Amino acid sequence: MMEIPIINIKGKETGRKANLSKSVFQIEPNTHAVYLDVKQHLANKRQGTHKVKERGEITGSTRKIKKQKGTGTARAGSIKNPLFRGGGRIFGPRVRDYSQKVNKKVKRLARKSALSIKAKENSIIILEDFNFDNPKTSSFLNIIKSIGVKDKKTLLVLPEPNKNVYLSSRNLKKHSIITSSELNTYSIINSKSLVISESAITIIEKILNKA
Image (tube, rainbow, N blue to C red):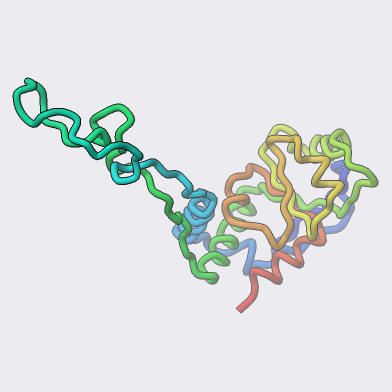
């Protein structure tokens, strides 16, 4: 077990420690699994709705625009010729699906590897559970400042969706919020500091320790 002190929203130690599972936070990182999962995550975000008109899709006359010989220029058979302005595009992008498949076990290994990397770098902070009565960005900033990650790219992991906390942080570019069930390899790797809510640890370990 790895023990990390639990701190409160004022940045002070509570006197309690979180026991992090060795099978989740202390494995030998598999960098290839991390690569595959991150690659899939980024590929799946691509819309693939790009499209241009090719020669056969251009609206226009099919009349031969000039005689074959005697003009002193290259022959041309259609106004839809890709060489002409307004003609079709050659080998242009078509609508396609960029999504990729990664097995569940590989994705699970990738998340464990990413968490183990953060643990090895001492980039994990365990924060006591908290809530806001109303959405307020200044309140969220005070917490981030107290725990020493104000100027770092931070990912806060909550046990469940919290509207007030989310609305308090959505205007901050460097800080993002995610729930335990939504935690993914890209989000972990893309952050400098990983702040995990105390109650979220159990959920993360339960998800990642599935057979």
